[in-house]
Image (cartoon, rainbow, N blue to C red; front, side):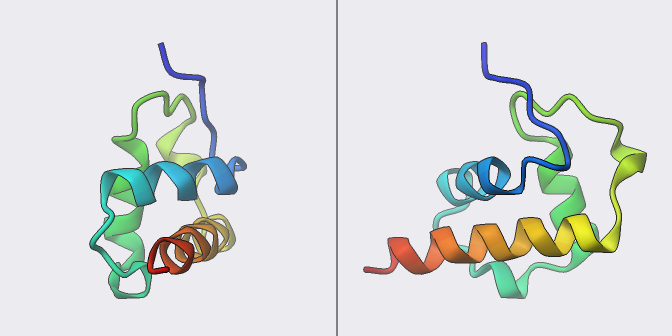
Length: 72
């Protein structure tokens, strides 16, 4: 079973999003879609309503860092 992840685990969420959506530029994902992708991740165990703009921004930044690294 996957480790439980929460909204505050931005780096882990970014890694998982990059693994699940390797061809998606994170800057093109709207926050509503980002929210949906996060709550669908395996191991996500937080309250979907505890999301906020700053948490989503941190996740998007972490995902973008992973995406840039993957581009070579």
